[in-house]
Length: 220
Ligand code: ATP
Image (cartoon, rainbow, N blue to C red; front, side, top):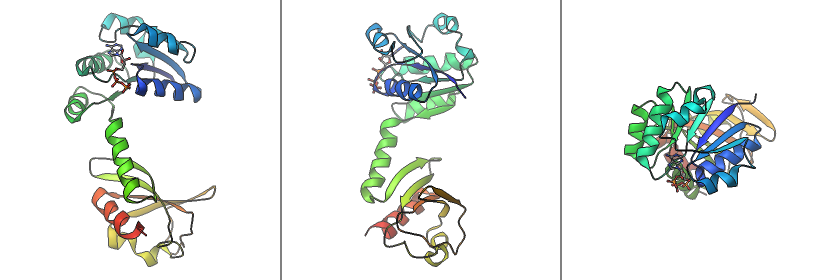
C-alpha cells in the first residue's frame, strides 16, 4: 500500500531515504531550508518544499498530521532536530523517526516521544565490526541495548551438522529462529535439521552470547 512520508533535511542521510522511498513507490514530501537542495530533489520526490521545520506554522500549513510517517534527518543542528521532533509529536504525527548524533541526543529524543531513533554511523560501525570479526556475519539488527538478531552464513565448521548436534542453544544461549536456503525459508527449524553449506542462519540472542558464537564457531 502506498504510504505518505515526509523527510525533513536533505543531507546524505535524508537524501538517500527520499530516493529509496520513491523507488519503493511511496509518496514523499521532502523539505529543507536550503533552496538548492530542494531544487535538486524536486524531480525525484512527489513534492519538495523549502521551509524551516522549527516553525510550527510551516508544519501546520503542510497538514503534517495527515502523513503516515515523518523522518527528521537533520544532522548537526541538535536543537532544531529536538524542537522539530517535539512539535511533530505535539501536532499529532503518528510515527516520527529521528536521526540522533550521539547518545545524549538519542536520550532526549526518546523522552520527548520520538517513536524511533536511528543512529546511522554507530549502527553501521557495529555492523561492520561484526562483519570484520567474521565475514560470515551478513547482517546485524539491534533489538535492544543487549539483544540482536544476526544473519550468519553457514561455513564449513557448522555445515553438515544437525542443529541438535551443534548444541548451539545450550553452549551459547542463542537460538536459530529461521534458515534461509535458496529461495526457501525454514521457520523454527527442528533439532534434526542438518545445516547445509550456503544456508543463512537467522540467530537471536544476547550480544555477549552472539559474540561468543561468532568468535568461537565462525572463525575458520
Ligand atoms: P548528512 O550526514 O545526512 O549529510 P549532516 O550531518 O551534514 O547530514 P546537516 O547538514 O546538519 O546534517 O542537516 C541535514 C540537512 O538538514 C541540511 O540540508 C540542512 O539544510 C537541513 N536542515 C537543518 N535544519 C533544518 C530545519 N530547521 N528545517 C529544515 N531543514 C533543516
